[in-house]
Image (cartoon, rainbow over all chains, first blue to last red; front, side, top):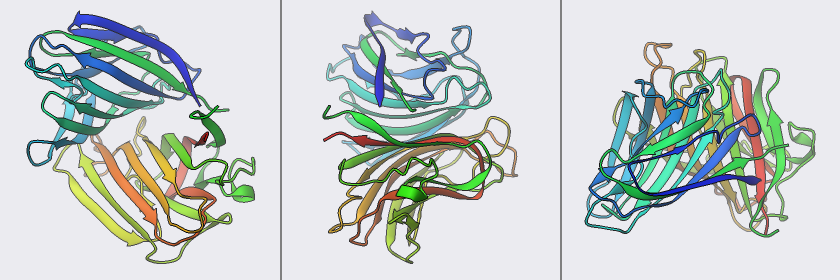
Length: 167
Length: 187
């Protein structure tokens, strides 16, 4: 079953930090991004993890692969090897305010001996496309939170975190 | 309460084994004697921290009355195979299983995770359908070079009109760790 952990919201920000959302209470998590809109400039969102001390991990440790299902052209694909963040979250054009919806599963972030896995799906109004991605943070360490970044300009952003509860 | 996911079955790998049954009644790995049945229409599965002791893959088979359905050419699956280091590929087969991952890494820290939705399993008048989204660390080439993350997106179906009461998650290598859960979506 899903258990509500936290909702974090802010407006006109270039990043949103969600700290202390992962713990030994759950193995896996679902994160719903229910708002990512009103962009001040064209941007393409990214996501980073927070280490056991709550520090954002900016090292080249992010690996991911995915597909973009586009309304306006053939589908495309993107990937990353040794990147400084997971890419391809919310794309927003400053001329649109139609927002982004995103669901992401995070697997075993609190397990210090494993690489944390993230699997995300997003649909965005700006650019009219869906995104389907899987990634691995390839350093074994305890992860305690996440940070979304716009890369350029500001957005209004809401996120809700649920723990997936077992026995 | 309608709309809530309820835990139906769960298995935590504590000693090495080649397969985990979720549901399937007395054939289930947990000992909970849980089955996929008409209590729920839709089931949700998570697998996380799955570690193999060999550079192998993770597969799924359908359980009928607690036994693996090994009937040839009855399961059809098509998935987008997505690679961090090269172009994506289409991957599709007719067989008696479906892939969930392929060529898992075995270096320290490497593991697999996935979530699945299961629909139509209890019904005997239709097939049994699975949607797949997974991520794992690929073993690299040469083996052990690592630093690759792969992902799968797609589906698989048992095209036989029959009731399925569970799934088996299996590999040609041993699972040495992993947490596997089966949830039902309350009607």
